[in-house]
Length: 377
Ligand code: SF4
Ligand code: SF4
Image (cartoon, rainbow, N blue to C red; front, side, top):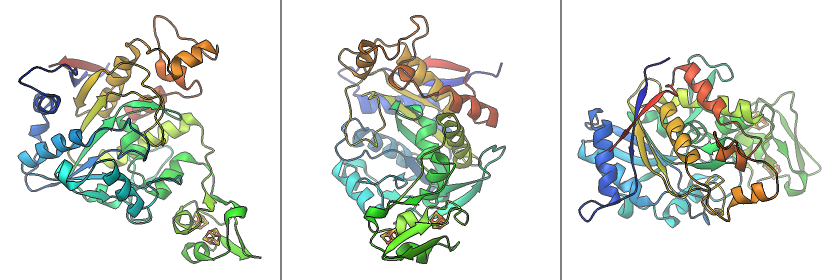
């Protein structure tokens, strides 16, 4: 068995002399984040700004603590995320920055700027080889993420409808993918035109480098024999009429996320922080957040993203289920029940998901180990 990775943990209890932000600072110190050479280095802090309407995303105060910590080590932090594949409040850089500001991530509250890593329309990407990749040879990663000298993930750990939970790997792998990258992870296929929404403007035909799109009778259509699935047409369409396929199995999706994570973290200093609070059953991409399925747990930090996700999952699964939540609904309707000795709240919330597959595949790729030692501070 691999040597255990250390995962540092602090609960959310406070004292009159130490608030939660100070406690997070102490956790980062104890976990060794100050061993990273930040001196005049650009440090990307990857987080999720929250879809407008969602109230479970991490408060900007947490981001400020991490940004201040980086600055105290001499680094130049910025907050970053990539645009979404789906149509919502974060589908291009302008809307995305608006959403970040609406949710409180302003330079005044966090002490650093927001940079949308894959640019205005989600097409500013770097092709990054995946060492040992079985599904992805070159990951398409937002440029600003790859331009950073140091990479830090700051993750809100919660449930996820496709991957079981949204932890560090999801935040890094899926979150740092450009629009084409996200499509590659979500889909084994190609996008299609939702004909009723198409007005025949032809903008998509001009961006397609593979001549896969034709417009006839004011309606576009995509020839899947020519399309390579780059996703650029989706970014260009002013009517959001080009929609991604979402036909990859959750098992393969998780493995691709692990491979994209590998592309992001390889070859530079990285550090990972996860806060297990407001554990909603679904992703912060939802414009609503259902009630937390378990009580708040605490904050975790590690150099190993696999060990970190495993430790967070174990901690959530060790908690009692909160009353009147999606989990009690599942049980009341008899959709699923838990093994009393080995509860899996994520599987109960989303029975067709398999979160273990991402960690198993990540371990195989050399991203880290599921064998961890929890160090409580
Ligand atoms: S860009 Fe959108 S609206 Fe314009 S032709 Fe293409 S699919 Fe139709
Ligand atoms: S996904 Fe890329 S290759 Fe396929 S139709 Fe759109 S622009 Fe063309």
